[in-house]
Image (tube, rainbow, N blue to C red; front, side, top):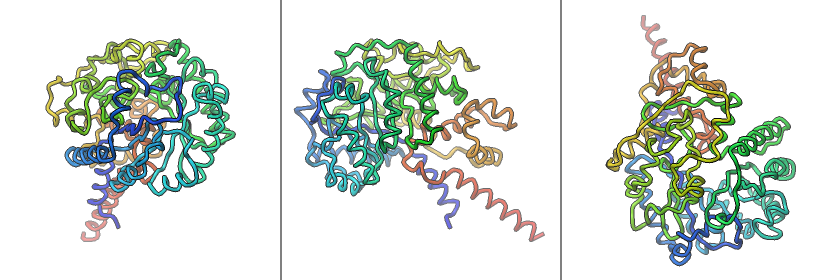
Length: 489
């Protein structure tokens, strides 16, 4: 039987601050997509000429391991991409290294080299999910990529699933393919075994700089509403495919439909939303570090520089953690849960902190009590440790909260394992009607813990909740001690 001490250790392991690591290990690709961000003039030429050998990748992994141990962090998941990772000759040696280090990873690539032999090797490497792209139905998708690409992709979805690997389909949304978003959702649900689907608004980067993006905030509001409604319909019709909510604007739709309420931490911190600067970094095949792959601003170079120096010391990254740098988001009631997409804003204005031109918060008549929350983060001259403490406060995962030992909070947590949706729709109202006594920190903790977004980034999200398990253990221990005391009396 697992002891309480062991249960506590499981929680602490589950609480390790997760850092997503998008790793572009090659520029080799069989496509030249009309909207691909890889071909940006700021990075592509150097990246193409100076791709790191396997030894360089391993040096980076060694550095990341050191960071994990020093700061109680966990890099998960590794998003392995390119180019097409399948075109890198030593891919399976690299994946073996990831497996040896118990690293959770997904692959984002092309369908072309997916055959029985390679998929067997991917399964042996520990791959759980392979992401393919579809940019619309057949004619539109082939226009973006190459003739026959749509049919090849659909065929490979079936082959991927044959080997028990999850298959996510990703769409980059532009005005030229927006009309096919809903038809593609239904096509995938009815005709494929894809396990999930996601989309995001296309960014003006690389090849996409030549594309005319003329969305308005009103357009996006309507498109996201249609997505929400179609997602609901397909679920009611019994289709198992999971429609993800990648863009932060989905939170506004969920709020509008009574499924989510924004909270604003009082310390200038965040609960979720854009992870630039908080817990993500992109690395190009030559080791160049970017705040986001779709925003070609270099913040460092690995393995010459350590992850610690880049992530905790780079001023540009630090600015994303300070609310006062955002021109409008910092005063918005959704600041702590959204912050839009800085890469999109940069592509339009070359200033990632400008107002997002597609934000439709003002179109939503529904308001909150979270008003005028002008916040400020710490100064930019923090030490590495001070900066990490600020980041891990966002994750609320660097240490076990003391209130987890409080009986009232324990019973509240167990109650929410059954009523999370009602709580997330309006936390303050839930607390009031249920007569729970929760402070702001406890509410923020519960919102993050029970949010869909948090659970999707946890590698063990399909296992028993270690916090609930720990709490039950505490309660059973108390009952046992009480019974023992009564027996002795």
